[in-house]
Length: 95
Image 1 (spheres, helix red, strand yellow):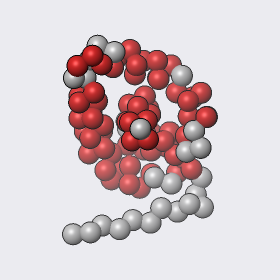
Image 2 (cartoon, one colour):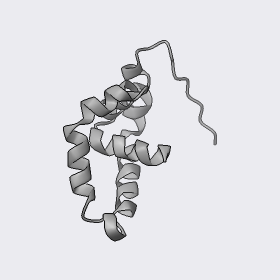
Image 3 (tube, one colour):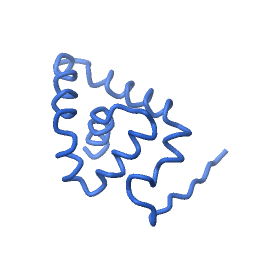
Image 4 (cartoon, one colour):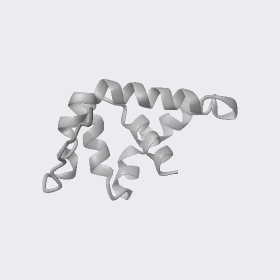
């Protein structure tokens, strides 16, 4: 089955993903946590909590510098997800 969704780009960036984040927030959080568990293999294992803390401490600055920062902030808020984890996951996606 193929699901189709419409994302209204006329909405403010912080609201564009609210419906999907609300509907799939729990699944998204599980996916991000699984991604982070894979990062914790090998030399990164001990650095992930420190990295997340640093990202969390500077989340506003990081998000301000991203052209889609408000989208990530809105997505995390609607899903009930940790913004630092969302940023790190998105950086992994970008890489």
